[in-house]
Image 1 (cartoon, chains in turn red, yellow):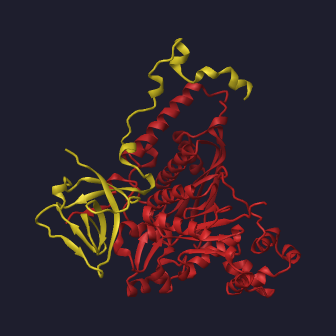
Image 2 (cartoon, each protein chain N blue to C red):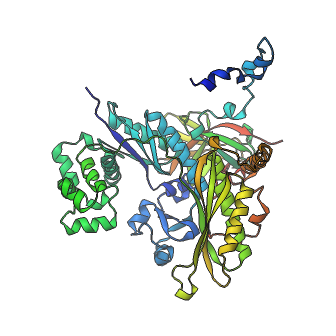
Image 3 (tube, chains in turn brown, red):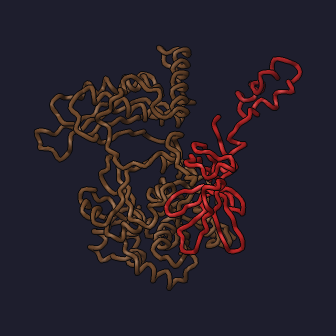
Length: 427
Length: 134
């Protein structure tokens, strides 16, 4: 007999807020929100903040009164912390299944096929992550990935099920009752625009969607939508993709904390973003064959104040050398910079990525020059990883980062910086 | 195995290639002493914290010391733990006597804290090592 496929989706509850609470237990039981880059919008909410009606993605200024009235704690995002805890969680989860697919910073799929007591297995996962990393997670189990996502959302909503919900254990009647009580917008991949179109033809709940005609779905929408219906019917169309696809590009860009006018400030910003991107590139053991630099004014500015331009540079030889990449980026930036605009955002993007193992030297490049650049980059990365980020940097990155993003409420880098360790009080 | 692989089998070890006899040290070349492997038993569950205060001085834990905390271990009687008490991380020695839970100091200036059922209390992790700079 062929073993029935089972997928589990493990998703951290309010991940960023949960990370913050681990080292700052005072936040427990209080309404807390974490803000996006530049303290712009809400990207993570504690359940208390959700109960106060704070919506996902809402700009901070729109909830300023509520924050004051209800004493909501607002925090800047601390990606060093979230990234570190995420890596720990994913590493523990790997032990619970022969196959894992990391889907995002706070969720992953595990292959549960052949697990005899799935609920117990899910409970064990939950207990283990909570104890070892201190982050609460929920587990959704089903015959397909799309259903596992739905099961996870159900596990979060129904507190009585203890954080683990298995759709494949439901009777057909129970299953249809669940579908009927769930809006179609809760289905994985069904975005706001699609919901509108589906509602226009009378599909409002997951049950309506589940009962819809496959051919019609394909005709009216796409094969992707048709496949989603198949998945809701328990027919697995999406398998585990274990190996993360090789990154197609590396993007490093930010909005500035204040408007930037001068070329020299933009140069510093672009150099810093490029240094970050190049480090990622080297960590991935890849080389970039091309790069892009872009600068933008505020997109809501008056038409005469609008300016947005991108420059792409193809490199003679693919490289991972920060010095070369920064030089190329700055040359590109100088070409697109126009005086007199208030710039709000800049960024760099590394393209045409290839594995370092496929490196071919160009006619004009010697082995010696390559190994010299490699030595410098290794020294730079090693120093920055032991002494702290930014210990060694290229002169072009500059020191006085007046353009740097706002993060007024950032917590310490508790797990990645010796200088910012959490305190255990001996009193 | 490709042709290329077969032609270069001797790249494995420098000493094996140069001399007729393999050096007996070859097998140990990778075994540099690594403090991480000594001090960290559960990588994912291990955190470093900084001590502030002198209530644990009798256990050799001073203000400013670095402690290694393993959250994978079950907290046990008489072990030094980090606990969450009133929203703060606190380092103390755990005492479990029957149903009574208390947090003992290692300094006579600090009384024991008896944890009542109404206290907001939780064990955060077990302290496994102290790193004290001289």
